[in-house]
Image (cartoon, rainbow, N blue to C red; front, side, top):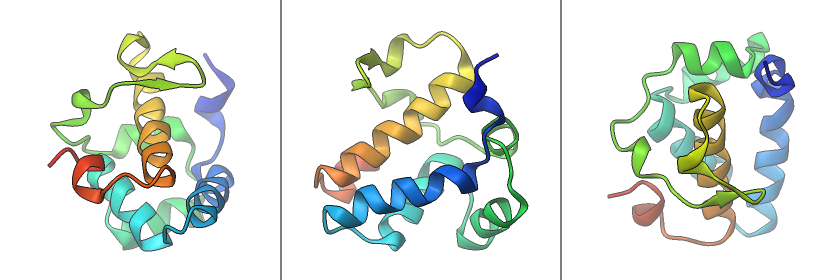
Amino acid sequence: MSRIFTVSVASVYPHYLTKVEKKGRTRAELDRVIEWLTGFDEAALGRHLAAGTTFEDFFAAAALHPNAATITGTVCGVRVQDVEDPLMRQIRYLDKLVDELARGKSMESILRA
């Protein structure tokens, strides 16, 4: 089991936020991307962050978007679509969406509209 599975989402969220804000994006946009992927609205996301939910429990409770499998590309040199462990793939999906947001892609493109 990877160590990231037991890391709290709340401990990584500030890094996601810093990354997107440095590129002129907002917390609302980050939360919208997370909601699209997981189904967690702002209140649910806030509860998970406050509770210190691990990535494993966070994604276990999530209702992954039906188009999540269309997320492709690389994160840290690893092709998202080639990750075999389902939980690790879901975490990489989130990483990829945050990367796309930080790179200035349109929300329509990020949300696979």
